Length: 410
Image 1 (spheres, rainbow, N blue to C red):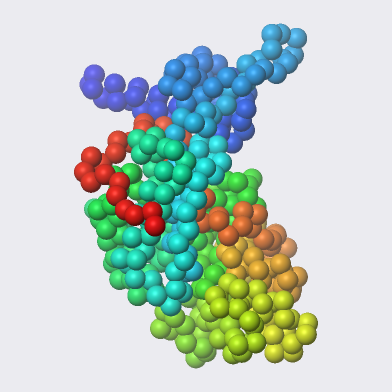
Image 2: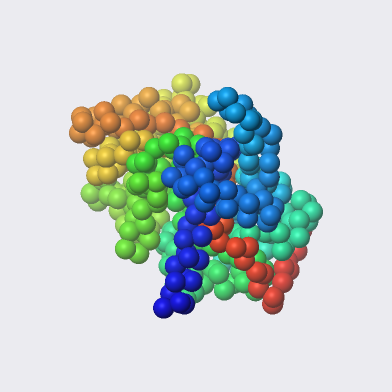
C-alpha cells in the first residue's frame, strides 16, 4: 500500500511539473500567479514546482511586471541554455541536421545533398552521423547537454522493440534505422514521419498555433500529410494515417512511385510535375528544386508551363477538398519546399479547386494557407520530439555509454 501511495505522489508531482512547463513554454515569460490561473494548480503547488525548476536551472527569473496594487510580480522563463535538442530531416533532396537551444533558437546546422532518385540507407546513416558530429562541434556543445535527437523520416515508422522504417517510394522495407544510427551515436533518439514532424512544428510555432483541428500537406518530390486533432497528431492503427499522396484521384491514371496508378503524388509531387512538363532542358537548372522554381518562373511566357501548373493546382485542390470532406479541419496548411513554391503562385487557384471539390459547409469552416516556417519545418518539428518528452516532465536522459559519437564531418 505504501509503495502505491509513493508512486501516486510521484506521478502527481510529475503531472504538476509538466503542467507548469507546458504553460510557461508557450506563454513565456510568465508569473507564478499566471501559471496558477493557466494550469488550475493552487498557488502553493505552482510555487513548489517553480522552486524545484529554479534549483535545477531549468527556469530563470526574467524581470518583473506590475501587479494590481501589490508588489511587482516576478516573471519566469525557460533557461535556453539548460539543454539542447537536435532535429534531423531525411528529405528527398538533402539531409538536414539542426541543433536548437530550449528556446528553439538554431545554434548550428549541417546539410548534405541527396540524389532524389537514390536514397541508400548507408549513405543516409553516414550523413546523419556526420551532421550530429558537425553541429555539436560548431555549437561547442557536449553530447551530455543534448536532451535528445528527433529524426523526421520518409514513410511509416514502426515503433516497437526496434524502430523500423517502411518507405515504399524510397525502396526501404523495414529498415532498422535506430539500430543503424546507434552504431554512430549514444544520443537519445526518437523517430517520426517527416510530414507529421512538419505538422507539429506548424502547430507549435507556425500557421497552426491556436488551432485544434489542422490538416498539413507537405509537397516535395512526393506528397505527405499529417492530421492534428485535439492538439495531437493522429497516427492511426499502424502510424500510417494521412497518406494523402497515395489516395487515388484518377482511376487507372499515371503510375506513382509507390507502384500504384492514379495517386495524387503522381500529379502534384515535384518529380511528377517536371515529368508532365517534359522539357527539363528549357529550365536551365540541374537539381529538382531549381527546375521547379524555373518552371514556375516560366509560367506566363510558356503555354506548356501554364497548362501544367493549372492542372497541378486543380489536382491539388481535389486532394485538399477530399481532406476537407473526410476530416473537417479548421485549417489546411500547405508546406514543404515544393508546396511553398507552388503555393506562392497558385494558392488562389488551389483554393478555388478545393471549393469546387468539397462540400460547402466543411469548406466554409476551413482556412487554406501556407506554412510559416519554411522548408526547414521538418527538422524543427523533429526537434520538438525530445522537447515534448522534456516538457512532459522527463528527467535528462543518459547517454548510451557505448558506442559514443563517431562519424566524419567532411
